[in-house]
Length: 312
Image (cartoon, rainbow, N blue to C red; front, side, top):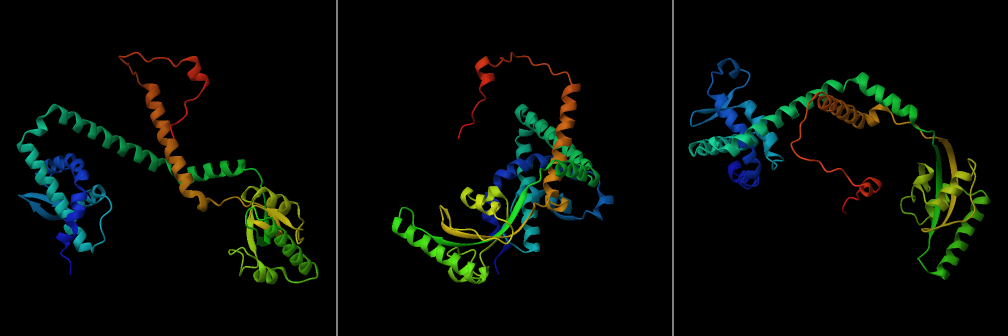
């Protein structure tokens, strides 16, 4: 059986850049851990100590988030890995404090920035959570669905005879072959059976050439124009596209169903959350007095007329 510590060592090495970021959090943990926490220990047990500094179960959750994707391992191995991760953070933090790095002005500015960033993220996350109610999401969904234009869908099957590009002789032979197929269909042969027998579209073989429902913009124009002009149950003449020669049978026409709430819930939730966050920040900016001690150059007339093109 593989030693969890040896298996985790390469992953721990790769996590060292993230570990450097965790030092800031570990500083706070080191200070907080020295306070009496007996009342919390029952729900948040101490899983290890590092030179007397406790590591709580809740610390492992923070460590797991900071460590990123972990290598496959058992729960016990993962716990040991995360304990070592936290232990390294505490040990490195203590070593940094011994060198008085925490008194460095640049470090203090970074620590203060990290505090602001964490508070900002916590508040914006709370705003997103509070805004993402079922009522709010359903309202956004209902408004969006009401504005969706009606769109026709066709359900069709086809038989394809492929043509090598630039081969006129093969093109003529393929056209003759599709005409012979159409003659069989006009005599009453079953479209699905003929399709399974002769179609050169791999996705349609075994399915009777069925393409399912599609909108006009989902097919190449030559195919779509014919499919949407046919009445339900009708069969086309030969249709030439970049893929070869087709015969098309329309089996149904309908208005495209609107997406259900559950189908688009993740996108709706993201929209509601981001709008709430943006509205909150916009209001804060409007109410704030922001003084910029530098001159902001106004864009030139040419710059206003021609939007900047992003670099490729």
